[in-house]
Every structure is written in C-alpha cells, then in structure tokens.
Image (cartoon, rainbow, N blue to C red; front, side):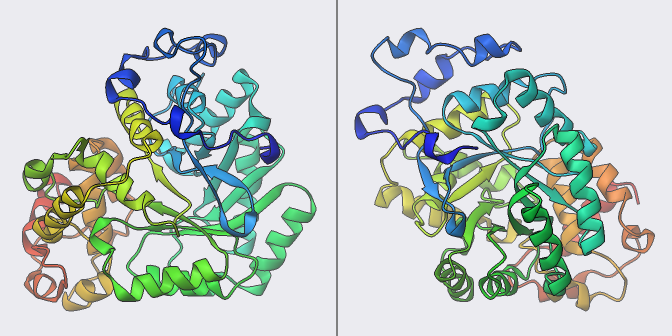
Length: 407
C-alpha cells in the first residue's frame, strides 16, 4: 500500500452519516467495476463517500483505518463483494491467516485484489500458526502464493503464547524477509490469558512492529493490562484490538437487556469504546454480513464519542455479563482440574458455535485438539469454577460443551 496516497481522515463535514444511509446502499455485486464504482445516489455529486478515519500504526509510521476487515469469515473465493464494499469506505486493511476459513481465506483475498486490480491500494496482513523460525518462513512462502502477491505488508505469529518463540533466530528470519523485499512489517497476535506478558515482551524487542491483542470493554480498568499497553505504546509498538465484543459463552440471554446503548447497538458501542482509547490504532472485526459491515462503518465514520450515559450503560453491561465470558486465563482453571483439558480453548470454540453460528467450524477445531483434551465427561470441573477470577460457571459450560461436541 502506498501510504502517501492513502486517503486522509475526512473532515467533520463529511463524517455525518446515518445508519439508514449506509444500509440504503446496495448489498454489493460481484463485479469489481460496479462495486468499486461511483458514489451511491444518496451521496450526491458533491458529497463524497465518508471514509473511515485513520491512525498511525506505531513504528511502521503508516496510517491504517481504525476499522480493519477480519478474514475469519466465509468469503467468496472468486470475488468477495464485502471486501469491495469495505474498500469503498476506506477500509483498505485486510486481515488474513493461513487457517482462516478452513485455509481458504488467503486465496479469497488474493482473488479479490487480483480481479479488482487494487494490490497497491490495500494492506494485507496474514498470520502463521507455525511459531518456529523454519515453520514461519515456510508458511510465509505458502501465504505469498495463496495471496497472489510478491510481498506482505504485515506478517504475524498467530495466537502466540510463549515469548520464547521471539528468539534471535526468528529475528534473523524476519530481517531476511524484509531485506528480500517480501515483508514490510512483523509482529504477533495474542489470544490467551498472558496478554500482559506478551505486550511487555513486544515492548522490549525493537523488531516487533505491531501486536494484535484481545482487548474489550471488560478490561478497561485492569491496572496490569494498562501498564502493559502503556509500555508497548511507549516503545512505539503498533496496537490492534481484537475480540472486542467480549466473547460471551452464554451470550444472548446475558446481553439482550443491553442490546441498545444510546444511538448505537451493543456491537457498535463496544467498538466506539475501543476507538476512544487513543493508544489503540485500530480494531479488527470479522464482518460476515453486509449489515454488520455497514453498521461498523457507520460507527467508525461518526465523530461523536460515547456519551456519559452510554459509557455507564457499557459498564453495567460489563458487570452483568462478566461471568458469561471466558477471558482465556486458563492458568487459573486448568490447574484446578485433575485432567489434561483445555478449558479456555474449549469455551472459545463453544462461543464460535453459539455466537458466531459456525457449528461446523467449532466442531472441526474442537476435533483438532489433543484427544486427551476432548474427554470432558466424568471430570469434576467444580475446582475450575471456584478458581475462575471472573465467575464463569465452568461446570455448566463444560457440561454444555460436552453436549455440543458430543464427547
């Protein structure tokens, strides 16, 4: 992506767009020339499409939109109109991974930019589930092939949990890829309960350009997390928020009373709350429908901050649903169970089943866990429930996981 030509944040005059305006735009068509074409009729000849605001991504010194297009959704392998629609509003950062979409995401992103002829206008990030230097380099080459490109703007070690993988040998591999012109920037994503540790590790390594980490409205008052974010920010590490919706396990019945927060629905409100943290450059969102895409864009281009009433509603929502969300800190609960289970991973996949409505994906990923971790029946999880610092009813959730995954 050629940053000097990147669209700038729109003026206040162009930031006013209603949800009705966005939802009135056609649902997109699978023809690049049309989807990427002129403004819709409602915009008028003198009123350009509003563009999602941009922020600098840490030491990369490049600007990225505050809303990123997450690739862990079903994408059309020929030409995905959701990506085209996102690009029209300045969402030019596409977040892929070698495992997304059952391994089909990268090919879909490659097909999109090749057909639309927009490779030089977009930012492509991908990720490797292989965390050794050799494994990362190997999956990187495969990613280039699938993405139909000769370079990546960013490459992450995906769901990194052990900072020991950020070794001198890994640093040399990354430096070589950059020297060869195949890679611009490098970092990692952090899903697990040691986000604080991983952010501090990134702050100490000049060759880590950015980190994507789990961050949502339930964590704003976490003193240790805030110290880690401050440390990473001081080191000029680019910070991207993910899992912003809170990943409830028992989802619908717990957040329904907070479905509307002021003028925003619950999903929009939590994104706006993240964007109000100026330490965060962007939030990635997996938008599998046009409605979600446009609602998120509407929240992004609107320059009004959450009101005090809306912030208080979010805090009430956080308190009311704290025990419905797994925070990934399985060092608390796993050690309280006399079995080699993986509670956080299991509840994350249960969330995929319940919230994302992806039962096939949830079952496939659960089946990929070690056999010992898939044996959930006949295990006493009461100690895990007691050990959970957030009050998750692990007994009930693991019993439900056993039913859902039939194990």
